[in-house]
Amino acid sequence: MAGTWKPGCGLAALLLAFACTQAMAEQLTVVSSGGFAAALKLLAPQFERETGHQLQLQWGPSMGDTPQAIPQRLARGEKIDVLVMVGSALDQLQAQGRLLPDSNTPLAASRIALAVKHGSPQPDISTLAALKQTLLNSHSIAYSDSASGVFLSTVLFSRLGVAEQIKDRSRMIPAEPVGKVVARGEAELGFQQLSELIPIGGIDIVGLLPEPAQQVTTFSAGISRDSSHQAAARQLLRFLAAPQAAASIRQTGMTPVSTSAQ
Image (cartoon, rainbow, N blue to C red; front, side, top):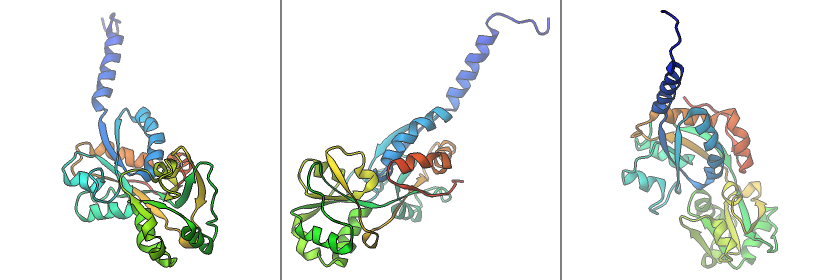
């Protein structure tokens, strides 16, 4: 008889719906540089709840020759779906044909800050003159091997006229947060993106570099040309670029970029 309920039909329908949902869920491998890592850790659980997709988060510098660096991982043929990294470095990967051509999506702007070991005196960096004197007075200086460190070592130190005086007491830190080096007491001053210093314990953040000495770095996301989960990857890019992600991005010391992924 039409419309007659049969025991177990409702349960079977629920199980079928659940199975379909599970079949549609995908696992995305996402590799992010340190600058956007804190924001991604905050946002990933929400994305997983809303979409059912699972994110396998991994970390590596945007540039450099260390094995963890994102360009090196791609060169080895690692299977990566989504890349989150310094925008200029992502642009280079796009020029090499390693991204889906319409997937390059700016997410956030980041600035460079200075940290010292927790409890240490905090030097003055409020002006260019003060920053220069702080660098000259320092015993040891550490900076990252990514965008901020490259800017400091190749542009800013020379602009301030201190490159020669500090070259023997300053060093680039490969594949490790600069804040950890400072927290261990291995460097008096540590420069890195504010978003990368905030999560580190055992340090005090003195503040951002003064604007005339500042470099604003854009962090962007893109989809690997070889991704097997391109539709789900596009969902993630739209989620990260949406207004709802802005609060988490600000919480980690960055400024959201108003944009929308395709």
